[in-house]
Structure formats: structure tokens, C-alpha cells
Amino acid sequence: MEARSGRKDGVVILSVSGRLDAFGARQLELCARDALSDDDRDLVIDIGGSSYLSSGGLRVFSALKKEMKRRNGRFALAAVGEYPKKVLDMAGFTQVLDIFPDAGSAVSDIAHKRKNPSLSGELVYKKIVADGVQLTIEPGRILAPSVLRVTGNLDNVLYSRITEPDVKQKKFSEVTYSLGLGALGADVKDAMPLLGEMITLHGSMVWLPTDGNNTPDFLTPADPESNVPVYTGYNITLDGQFAEYFTLESEDPRGVSISALYKAIFSSARDRVRDYTGLVAVVIWGVIAGFASSGIKKAPLATAAPPGGESIMAPAHVHDWLASDAGKSYAGDTLVSFGIGIDLKTSPSHFRPETLSALYYANPLNTGAAQEMYLHNHGVVFRNTPYDASLDLNAQVKKITTDGEFVDMRHLLDSTRLRKAKIGVAYIQDIIRNA
Image 1 (tube, rainbow, N blue to C red):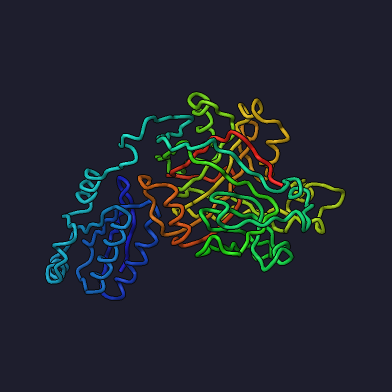
Image 2: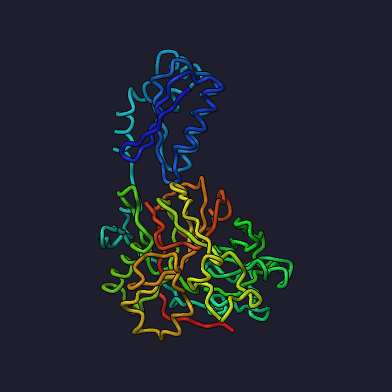
């Protein structure tokens, strides 16, 4: 059995040739898994090149129909030959499967009936287009002004000056969205040598231990009030709600970069948002087009500081301290991220430079528009987590971090690209430094 995959009007088409016996069915199952990205909702299998169908093929058809239903999409068969039709009739499958004379008519029917509630509901009140980025905006719910709470000193990270008193404990229940430098361990002494990039998402902590293995770890406690603490040497936490939700749909297969996405949000906020300070906190749930990332290799402890009091980001030291993972594309997989963005055209008139500098650093691996903005984002990659922008962002983030197939976690470079995304934006009014 062989299968060729293609796409038309956003529908994945698998064209099968050869026998769909037990072995062929297993091959088809693998081909379908490889062909489907997390944002795909509709699948057509053209079996015009297959003259034999067994119960193994029926089992795969049933599983794929169930999977596409889970994705709020459709599954269809096309070009069913005489013998496969008899098998489908005998098993009662012609009553439960959508069957079309050819793949083109199947795609046309799916495209005609397809709906996208996120772009047509009453909550949608504005669309914006900026530098080729098109976003649809829905209002959120603001109960109180959103603020960022900063624990620790970023300079202690950048100059590798962290000592035991600098490492704080946080309960899982204390943070919904945060990023920074952290670790898990039996106690602070156990955690300190492993302090690395971290993100917390709705009670889950994901982090990249600096143990030399370059393999992220995570924990989602059943009881967020448990006495298992997160140890952090530096942390930025969002305190507040999303004022707006943006939906991104990119027609460009290369997607839209994170820097272009933030640029569009900033440009729109300058014109529309009252009390816009040039500082936003952003949660993204999207589908990856291209992945660019970095990660700290060593825990920035005082005992490992570069000579002469230099920064670990200085040219002479950056390759010893910062790892790039440019070879990992993760195209078609799901990204969940939390980050902050500083609009340099607006923020200096609202915040002192020393206040803003507590939030970001100039990552030397970034090649984006640093003269316009500073971005600080961490992201987690998941797989087999269907994307549907009509669903609630917070509920989906919690579901994905609990049930999703975990793949990776990194500090995101600004050139990371998304082809679809739902984005929660909080417009920050203040920065609070915690002891």
C-alpha cells in the first residue's frame, strides 16, 4: 500500500493505491498521522487505487472519522471501487461515512459547509491589518487593571550572581501564567544547579534543566496547593485578565513571525486602547510554521560567573552559556506560550528605563526589530492537540497542558512563526517588584 498526501482548500487528501489489508491499514494509519497537522480539521481518503478492503481498513476509517469529529471537522471517502463498496455495505459503513465519487467533489462539499464561528459571532468587533498581518479582535473581560509581578533580579541572571537567598519558592496555585528561571527539586540546594528556562501555565510548570541533557521536564500536580514548591531565581507573573483576544489566520504557508504579531498588536493598541502604556502580556495558542529558540546551558550561579564581572550574553561568553535549537522546526505542531512585549514607541513615556529593564534582555541570537520592541517569550510544544479558534483560550491552555502530548519547551526567539493562533492580550498598567 502506498499513499500520497496533498491539500486543497484546507482539506488534507490521502490518495491510496494497493491493498487495504491488515498490513496496508497499518501503513495508512501511519500516513494519516504524518499528514495531519494539529490545525487540520478535514480529511479525505481517495481509495480509487485500492481494489481490496478488509476489516483492518474499516477499523482505520472508523478511527479517523472519530479523530476528525474530535477536531470539529469531517472525514470522507472518495472513489470507492466495486469490491470495497461491497465490504462497506456489508459492515454498515455506507450509512455512517460520507462517500463521494471523487476527491474533488468531497473537498467541494466540505468547503461549502465549513463554518468558522470565531470570525462571525457577535463578539467580534474589529479586524486589523498591519504589514500583512490580519487579526480579528474579540473583547475580553477586565475586572481590574492588569499588572506584572517580578520576583528576583534579572541582573543576577545575566551576570551569573544567583546565590541561595536569591532563590524563592512559589506554590503552583500562585501563578497562572509566568516565565523566568526555575527548577524543581527536593530542596533549594537540590534545585539550584538545575535552574533553567521555565514557564508556568495554569498549574503546570515546564522547565529546561541545566544538567547538560538539553531535555525539558514538567510537572502538573493534582493538587496545586500541595507542598511541592517551584524554586525560582527570577520570575515574571501576570496578575490580571486578558482585555482582548486576537485570532490570527495566515494565508502565507511560511506563517507570521512573533515579532510581526507583536508589531501588529502594538500598532492597533496605539490607536484604540485607552490607557495603553506600551507594555503587554500575551498568551498564545497556535500552530507552528517555524520554530526558533534558545536556552541557557548552565545555571547562572555566583560560583559560575564569567571573569571580570561580564554578562553571560557578552560575545566572549554567549556560546558557552546560550544554546540555539535552530534545527527543530515542529511545523504543524501546537505552541502554547506566555510572554511580554515592550513597545519602545510608547513605553518610555510611562515607565522608567530601570523599571522596564527588569523584564527583558537583548538576546544576541535574535535578529528582529529590536529598535522598535523588546520581546521575552517562553513556549511549550505539544502534538496531537487539535486547534480550534472558536474555543475558549484559557480552558484550552489548561486542557492542553494536562492532556496534550508534550514535546519540548524553550525560550522563543522573535523569528518563531505561526500560521494560526488565538492570542490573549493583557494591557499592563504597572510593574510590581516583589521582595
